[in-house]
Image (tube, rainbow, N blue to C red; front, side):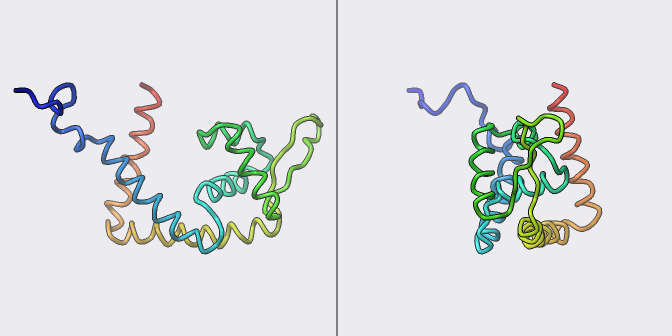
Length: 151
């Protein structure tokens, strides 16, 4: 008699590198959400704000590509952050129909508080791994990203 759970997937499926990456991502994401919640911010909003901070004037479409989400998801988050006074849309200087995104003073302040939370999480990881392994992990993750992009 054959067990229906046997078959097309190898027994080691959950010990593959992609699953290890996913487990780490889930753990980090859950911690970020938990720690950012008291600030009234979601991890996705932090990602959006840090992207606009590092590259002021991004459009919604550019932001969607950078964050690998739909333009609709970006528009929804931008609207929420704009309502809270953290982001503002400005007309592009040469193309009036294009709107650029910029942080407000309140947005910079909120981002600073949120970034301190993220830095604390990162420092905890680096502390546990040690400086050599933390640097090695960063290099390996960059290498994984490069390999997958080239595939």
